[in-house]
Amino acid sequence: MNIVIFGAPGSGKGTQSAKIIDKYGLFHISTGEVLRGHIKRGTELGVIADSFISKGNLIPDDLMIRILEDVLDNEPAATKGVVFDGFPRTIPQAKALKEMLEKRGTSLHAVIGLEVPEEELTRRMLLRGKETGRADDTPETIANRLKVYHSQTHPLKEYYTSTGEYVAIPGDGVVDEIFAAITDGIDGRQK
Ligand code: AMP
Image (cartoon, rainbow, N blue to C red):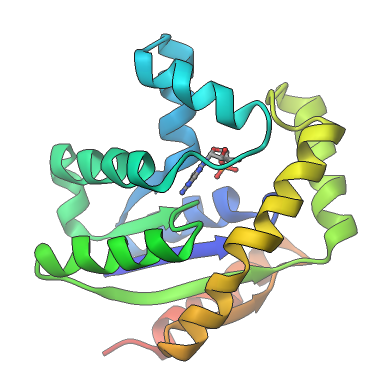
């Protein structure tokens, strides 16, 4: 079973992914975490990634798709099913994901869309910035990340609605109640 957890920055994708992988025994791939790992280790890729992330811009599609494919190829645990967190963020990435899964004889079970009002997103990211020191949770970068989300990532909602894979979840509330709505959404699609 492969799931995409979708939503704006600050919508709770990381928090809910952790709960989903626990309950369903899936493997978690957060492309943001993969990139931050490269930055921390000071790899060549990390240097490139940092030049985009620090401004709140997206890593170019061809590079991002290669990075994801590399993770899928090198993580044996990914064959048990994956929660994709932070990928896809553009329509070309969504098309590439479909192909990558098809090539591996599998498909998407659902796209869980966490829907959270904009003021709440900003509030959460500013709080996270204070608590964790995450470098791109600054007022200026947050504003650009939201702009980029609206122009490049939000169109995926319509895309996945048209494929019938999108499940809308109100993401503004108590963590466990949101998770209960997510599991209802996932189980309701159980084949
Ligand atoms: P996240 O941890 O998912 O909020 O991602 C942090 C940052 O990593 C984003 O603001 C982007 O700069 C970059 N990033 C993560 N995933 C992707 C992706 N699928 N495509 C392009 N850039 C990404």
